[in-house]
Image (cartoon, rainbow over all chains, first blue to last red):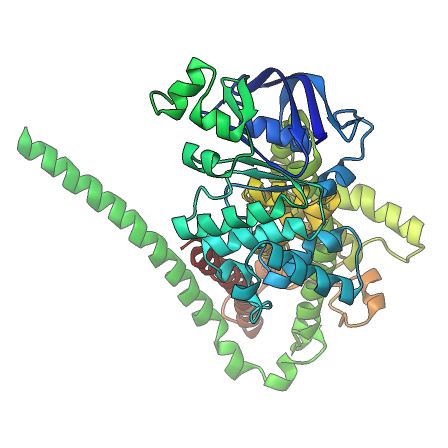
Amino acid sequence: MVDKIVIENLSLQYSDGTESLRNVSMGIRQNAVTVLFGPAGGGKSTLLRCLNRLNDLTEVKASSGQILIDGENILDPKVDVVALRRKVGMVFARPVPLPMSIRENVIYGLELAGEKRKSKLDEAVERSLKLAAIWDEVKDRLDDPAVALSGGQQQRVCLARVLALQPEIILLDEPTSGLDPISTGKVEAALLELKKEYTVILVPHSVQQAARTADYAAFFLTGELIEYDDGRKMFTAPKQRKTEDYIMGRFG
Amino acid sequence: MEKSLSFREFIITRLIQTSGYSAVLFVLLIFFFLLREGLPTISEVDTSSLMGVRWYPIESYFGILPLITGSLIVTLGAALIAVPFGIGTAVYISEIAPRWMREILKPLVELLGGLPSVVLGFLGILVVSPYLRVFLDLPTGLTAFTGSLLLGGIAVPTVVSVAEDALDAVPRAYREGAWALGATNWQTIWRVTLPAAKSGVLTAIMLGVGRAIGETMTVMMVTGNAPVLAIKLGSLFSPVRTMTATIAAEMGEVANGSTHYHVLFFIGMVLFLISLIVNVIASTVVFRAKKRAERILS
């Protein structure tokens, strides 16, 4: 299998000096779930936000290194950021349904991209809601406001909204942190479906979730990549002492 | 010791209570006074005369329509200027300007809001109106449009300040959500941030309009003070007279207790009613938005 994303010597420091990345290098496989885990402030979210250049909008003091997606360095200032963000979709920790109907939420990104044909939009609504495993729950009330849904349903609508753009890579930043176990299970099941078509990068909200979902897992501690391996090996026989301590719950 | 402390508590509590009640009392007294002096108008002047189009108090023509339309056309013009300009500035300050620029602009705009209106009126007479007269080839530069232009300038700081606060209060997550979907900066502002701040922006507009309609000094100085019915589009470029300017200009020379005196207070009541309506609309909008926000968060 090929590496969809190659990260080379990526370092980053925020202006207030809080969270940063130190010399991170890793390759991320296509059609797999790669999990970035570790204690808070380790740089997982920062790395995710580098992958779709959302960090452009935060105060960054210094950054170096490069990120290649399909061989193209996306940190190059000349890269079309809007096109990049359509290719690399992102789901946030707190679901952010926009104040409009479910259908409008799902086609929002497509409309922004200039798609007007109703048939295309309707098709996208059904396809992405099905992929996000929520079609059966909302198919009869697509015109209800999205904010009226439960938290778990909102999060899957937000996932569908990203999927509607047909991205190649999906970033998920603790997508189930506010959800109950049943909703969490539904989102995780959706992820397993998704990896058949997409490259999925997940920051889980617990070590258990990391172990359940990871094809590949990367352990981050204070901005450094400590260990990166096959998911099963990582959670049964970690090579690094620090990783083992964290997985066993001895710190963090 | 114990006793003197509780005595002090008692005094302070009473003092604060008294000042709180007196604020309400003063407003009620003003309202009562306004009614007492204004209401006799209804028996002294025919309704048909009151609703007439001629305002010649000396010859007992008390038609207040020209004054109402004068106020409305000047305010409308001011709103047309202040709203786009004010919201544009607010969006720039809150969403586009780099941080250092924001820190210069925000206090500057608020400083502008504190400019005495008589100073602006002075500027209007000396600079704006001669220029307009030449530029638009009008018989006089003292027109409703001149008033609108300056009133717009007065309302802009109010609109900017309130609208900017509302935009600033929009959760960052909304913007990030839109950016992550591939929205451009402009699409994010227009389709996410502004709609999310809608109620605050509406309040800003209402407050700006309220500020404009109650303004006296500037309009008295620059609108030409001719009580002519202003209902045509062309009226914008001819002299008008507003309700506020009429009261301010004529109150000093009117005989106490005369019909003219009562009519001036009646105009005050109309003005009071208009700003009350504007305020009620503004607070209903805010109230509704708050309730909706609570529903979403619960």
